[in-house]
Image (tube, rainbow, N blue to C red; front, side):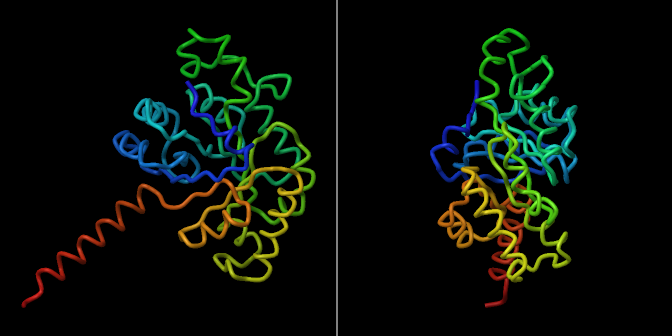
Length: 256
């Protein structure tokens, strides 16, 4: 029923995931057994809404990878929709304050932890397993909050004091942009901000994630204690694979 990531997070294990931005079910069906711990379906920056998500979840049924959905915004209706459809976890962008963190927890977790509304449509096998699902959903679904603004870094102690979420995750592009140094990931101020988040999450026992585009950097992050790591996406694979093949063909067609 679940592809539950929380026990691995609590043991301190490192999880790797890949981004999904294409709405064709064949894409996630093919990638669901590619060796990643989770697929991170992006509903914030790609056109994957409720109908598309439902079809993607059907395509991943039986796959080894957990399915996490990034909602478009910190919205009760969007978080509830994704969980009721049966995602294994929800990824909430731009959480900058303790109030916003509490709002996400309330939307994602059943009482007494939160205030999630009862109606787990597909998640409960169309209400055939209601009791089992509701009893276990809080511990078996993963709520990840994105720390991707310098405001959130300043409010991190208060955010981490909110009970009920399972991991934090640094969004490096947005964090650097909020500091006026977009893409300057070697800038001392950016490095200091990341280290602040890392140290505070470690002290609080909160699993932390990061997005990278480099395997060497991913290994370095894991050595530093980052547990939820994303590298690559479906569209990356498509473009890079096509570019490599085109280059090989051009080389083969050169006059001898």
